[in-house]
Image (cartoon, rainbow, N blue to C red; front, side, top):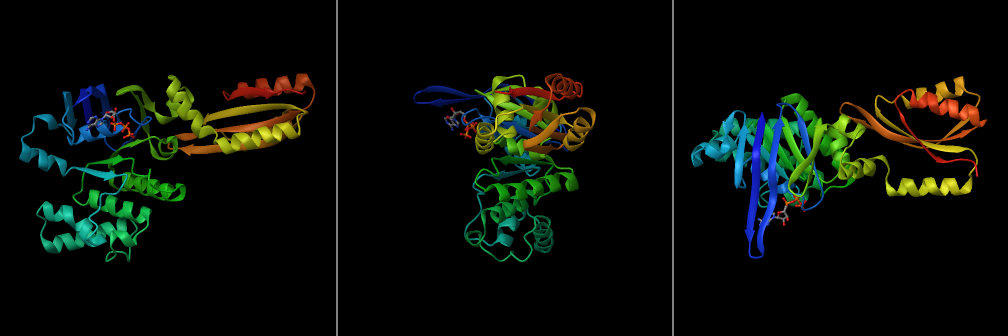
Amino acid sequence: MISLKGISKTFKTKNGAVQAVDNVNLEIEAGQIFGIIGYSGAGKSTLIRLLNLLEKPTEGSVKIDGKALSSLTPSKLRAARQEIGMIFQHFNLLWSRTVRQNISFPLEVAGVPAAQRKKRVEELIELVGLHGRGDSYPSQLSGGQKQRVGIARALANNPKVLLCDEATSALDPKTTDSILDLLLDINEKLNLTIVLITHEMHVIQKICHQVAVMENGKIVEQGPVIDVFRKPKEQMTKEFVKQLAQTGEEEQSLWHLLDEKSDGTIVSLTFVGNPAEEQLVTELIRRFPIDISILQGNISKLQQGSYGKLYLRLLGATNEIEAALAYIRGKEIDVEVIEHDR
Ligand SMILES: Nc1ncnc2c1ncn2[C@@H]1O[C@H](COP(=O)(O)OP(=O)(O)OP(=O)(O)O)[C@@H](O)[C@H]1O
């Protein structure tokens, strides 16, 4: 569906040239949710804007649905852009227009007749869950509702691709999740290809099938989310994966727990894929004469499987604990002994 070959973008500034995107090659299949993650300045915004030629590449080619965008005439490019919707971090709504009028706007630009427009706007209002808010102005809506308007507007002309530029970065965690659920729903219902950029691993974990990690304008690692979580290769990818496994708050409360009671062997288990963590604990108790307490757990669902950590305290004879650990490792679960009896 989307093919980027040797894409580079250099900005000329008064302080010299800035290479924002450096020789990126990407293939994104139809129907996928493809996430691009990286820290600020990595080149994500520039890359996503290259996909619909809001930025012109310095080098390389962009093909969407078989069309080489970079070689289209301006009028053909305008037509091709109708097949590519985009949503933004700060929504980019028309503040003097109602929800209905905002959603209708791209249909007006595309020359859709009034009666058809009206029908389509109502369909879109339902699709994004804004029933009853059609006559509200953007200033009367919450952040999540504003982004729903952004999504409806982006989908108005039935695009094949939706580009999301940090679409949830301005939203609180609960609203973020509801918008991510909506994107997932749209992807499934409409078989829409979604490309998103983010600096939050949670977004990748929750809805993406594939992920690319970006650093200094380059894609340094990419693959199915589950594979990248299982075996992150680059240091930066490891940092992102770690960020998801444990929040700072959880880590602190764990150390607090360890300080209070330090008997037993404390282990952390990292699950990727199909964890069945409850079953594992039951099996361990049944098979080995040891006591187990769960100190903390944080297992998140991915689009294909799960990922997370479980912290256990094991109490019992050393040889039994060693046998239990070997049993866990035999299940291809990563085990790290954090602390032994003191
Ligand atoms: N129009 C521009 N003119 C000059 N330099 C630019 C321009 N746009 C981006 N850059 C530079 O290109 C590099 C990549 O920026 P970009 O915004 O693509 O990164 P990003 O990963 O999206 O980061 P952020 O999330 O902070 O926007 C940065 O060094 C930035 O300063």
